[in-house]
Image 1 (cartoon, rainbow, N blue to C red):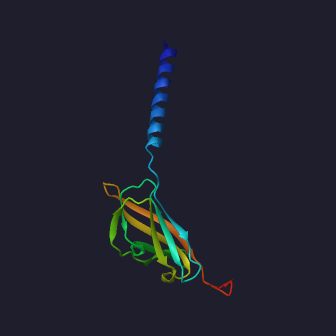
Image 2 (tube, helix red, strand yellow; image 1 turned 90 degrees about the vertical axis):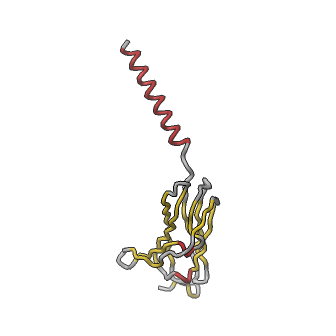
Length: 145
């Protein structure tokens, strides 16, 4: 009788484990992401920033690039606020939202671009980051030191 109870318990445990794994992976939401699609090659370029929303979730996000917080790394490797966001927000379920940042607004250096907003009907806080390195402009095909 003891062997039968052990098999039954193991079977029940396996069934619960399978149900748990199926529930976790079956209901997984597509991940939001923020990526730099085109870094600048000159101060005349625009930096293309892409917010991917593959699950077409309801988002409340900045209308334009001026709604993106920009942080810059100093010479000691510490971050400081380079540009504070200041832009209206809007609701969208678009699969992809594009932001274009004029490269001339940034000096050469290492940056974190931070998009903040809300997601879903409950308004869960949303914060996404993208890294960006702006190199000095090239002069006659060579980098400026």
